[in-house]
Image 1 (tube, rainbow, N blue to C red):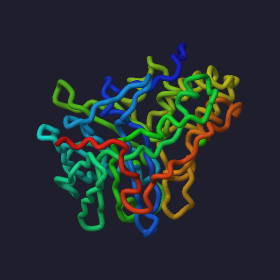
Image 2: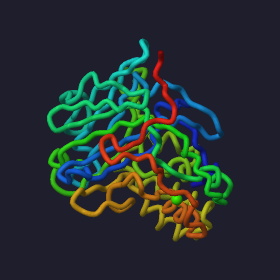
Image 3: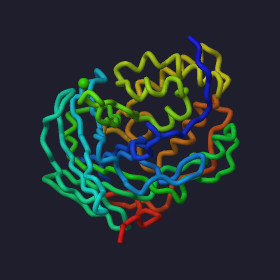
Image 4: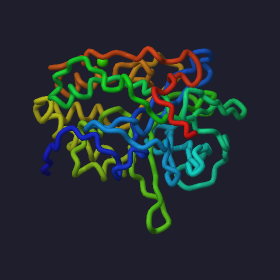
Length: 325
Ligand SMILES: [Ca+2]
Ligand SMILES: [Ca+2]
């Protein structure tokens, strides 16, 4: 097998920022540990190389999914599907469906016609014990991305300090997740020519794809399911040899700890990425830098943002108001 390590690449699936998976957070609701907060972030407002993306938050032709494995076989047992109306008249709305079992449509709509926020307000949609928010917020992710691109020579410059993100925030009772640890991941589907759906994006752990999956393997990786992730251990190991100077054996061992690409989450245990769930303040950039560089660099000098909210939707208001007037 030969791979060329193509370097860090922050490109978007099909060149479309709206389809780009960014981060997945999972933690108990601070005010009520019998409920969980699951946050999926897509579509960064800023691109690297530097540039801005579209103001339409979510792709109306796509299905965004939160996949949940409840029995440890890495096959989804519950899927929350998020779909969005076109933004023709300026405002998008969202529908959330809960589908049990593996594939296909069906399921039941739990939230309908939820407004997609483009400004500072955070309209909340509620149905039974579910609460939902979708729209632009301040990106909670913090990282010296420029330093990472410069061979991990960090200067403490937070690329995301003024960045926004398109967020889907779901609050639900823990019993909806079953009893015990679950595996979580995100995927994005778009219509295929044959009337089926094509999976064009997926992930759970932050930064794996841009840092460790070479361009020639990206389509295969984002089109796969976690149950098949053993096939990508050699791919990630090869990248780790290049970036971190690992020996082949050690690179393979470390790659094996990064896959399958899921976040394990048990709301009854303490939350800390990557072992259990992910808090908005977990310093994923630091823990990943240590892995990617074989502990030659262990921090980027950037910490959590100070605009997080103590209550739903937990993410601060966006830096830019995108409401059309
Ligand atoms: Ca399963
Ligand atoms: Ca940091």
